[in-house]
Amino acid sequence: MSLSENDKQMVKTLWAKISPAADQLGCEALCRMFLVFPQTKTYFAHWPDLSLGSDSVKKHGKKVMDSVGEAVNNIDNLFGGLSSLSELHAFQLRIDPTNFKILSHNILVVIANRFPDDFSVEAHLSLEKFFARVALAMSDKYR
Image 1 (cartoon, rainbow, N blue to C red):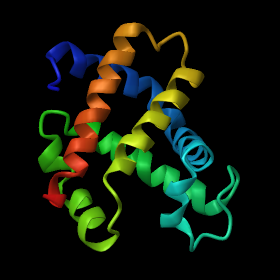
Image 2 (cartoon, helix red, strand yellow):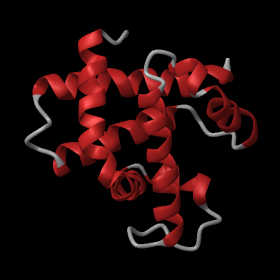
Image 3 (cartoon, rainbow, N blue to C red):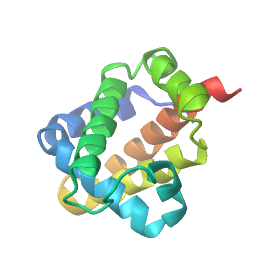
Image 4 (spheres, rainbow, N blue to C red):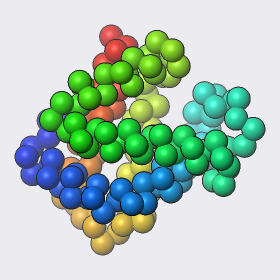
């Protein structure tokens, strides 16, 4: 699923609105993922607290959304832009790549809840395509 120029512009425009709240969105998306997809907690068993207010979840939520911002900045070269992150997750962290799709879905849900006026059908489609490409780029080093 490729991104059209219109998709890219839609993602960039939405990111400009979303990015000031990115840290909170990342934290909320992680917590939602842990609740709805409890199997994802296995990668975070070393964290003492997986709740919304925990420092670990806040910190990692920020990392996740910083990476999404990096993906937006590299929207024309997602595979190159996310290469080192893909390598880290594949070889050191050994995260099941299915989790990239799961987290992407949860980020979309949080964005839809927080920015309902900006989450049109077109915006949903563009973000869905973008996150599918991000998940694919994150999975690249697994092959």
